[in-house]
Image 1 (tube, rainbow, N blue to C red):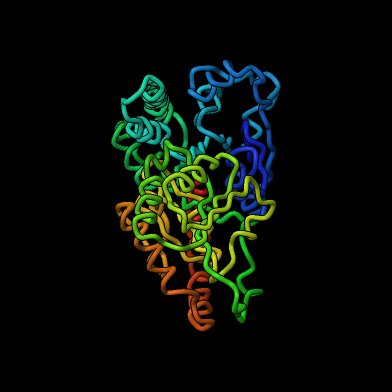
Image 2: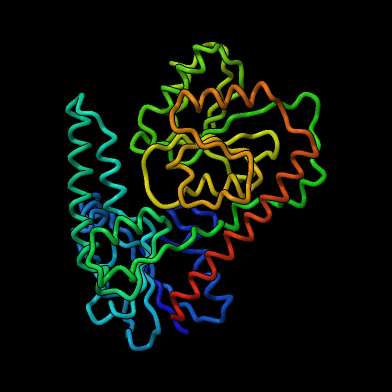
Length: 375
């Protein structure tokens, strides 16, 4: 088959410049199946106002440079969903949208995160609400016109089916989020697992931890740790997470050892098996949380929330704790700190299960994708 991929995000296995890893994985798998891929990257707008119109789905992209005849392709793959209203009507019937989230659902969740305690938060809340209404209109209009609309969340699928006509239900498909190859550690290379006497546990806060996703979670965790006078090592990763580091400094008490790294070249550097515990206190968002699924796949112990763990296969793994409130989250951090480092036997047993997790996740992703393009 022949695919035309239209995207504003350049596919990149390193998953930089936006969520570029998932589209890279999709394209690479399609190539492995013998499909021919033609990629058209739409240049990003330099004007911030025009760019914002596009992000909110109000503006139409200039596709005059596309110069492709739809008749020459079996399928048009759009990524992300913001492009759907820019595509000519003649192309929609053979268009597969890789959303990957239900944008309207994510935006109304974000809207609810901001309290009306300041003018700034009221403006943020209003912005998210307008975004939600705008995309709900787009989703209702275009889902029934495209061939399939792929989302990496079961709740995202449920949301879109609820807000569209029954005739469009079959168009919305849950696609298992692929594991990003570039972020995967070599599990076999770590065997046998051994630890030096001076090594200690480290609690890592990484990924997108903006306020619209975590709210007051960081502050609540820090306050709970301060009350227990917990002595432990915390690492905050990502330049956008400077505020998370500041919250821990202000509310976490004096017994915490807190470090901040704006950027790590190799994600695996903060994935020390048996030593790094990844913490994702997410209470908003949609789809599958890539940092959570990657941490699990890399053999790490994980503490997260129901939102952070949604759409991830958990029946074949252990040492993944789901906390419904931040007091329980902090208590789990302290519990793990007191328990200490795993024995080599426990670490190696966990890696076997994580290998099965990788195989099952990849198999479900590939099977769904094949069913969409062949069905």
